[in-house]
Image (cartoon, rainbow, N blue to C red; front, side):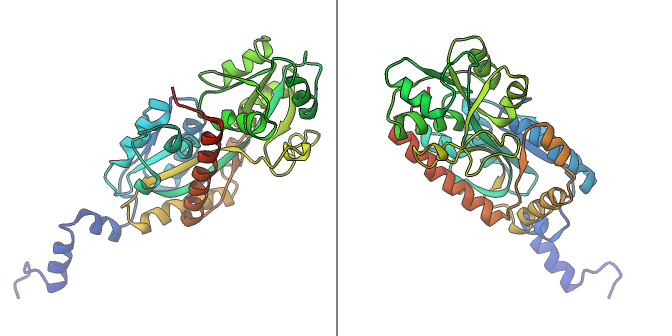
Length: 323
């Protein structure tokens, strides 16, 4: 046989490689740079996590991770873009809880969970109700009682955020009182509204409220976790007040297009979880007020699906509409 004549196995491989995804699944991944599509502007939680994780994975893989911010439509623009990307493992969507909220908040979000595989549920940060130091009511029970006869308002980082939804769940749905929601474009102006006396309360993430609580600029009222936080051991959970069970957090997810080979999704998940287990991301996460999560892809996908159902019920009950 001539030296250059292809063997049967080589011919078979060549035929397989007419399908790029078949070859991608057989070859080591990643073979080239990976793109993280962040559905929000720079400096937000999704962007911060994308850069922390991207740098660590780039060092592990020996390939660059390029962070591409594609904000717009409350995160829907970048999400829809990622849903249409080639499912070869080289486009990864980084999104917040907006992903699980927007499918119910918007009539046409441009995507669904079925368009993606959940590669990782990476981090979480609890939501926390804070008050102005000037407010004479200090507990949630006192605030709810006073709000029945006084005009109270709370701020949040925007319509459709889990901070707004948690606020509506507490006040409108469980306590059955009207505490006016004042949305802002981001956490910074939301907390400034409390400090400036525009509103009495604000529902924020711990990551955005932590420094203001430490300085005394705002006072913590209650957290939306199942148990008290180690950072705020004297601050009760909402559930402890007796109005009902409330567990609400702001999460960061990594998604890949639905048809991405399962082996690639598993490799991404395994590599990220290994970094978390080794403590490689602890310092950066702690500085940002974030807590890491270790779940496999199936567990992460199940969590996302559960969050969709949970927030859909709140959106419907509270009559929340996108702007």
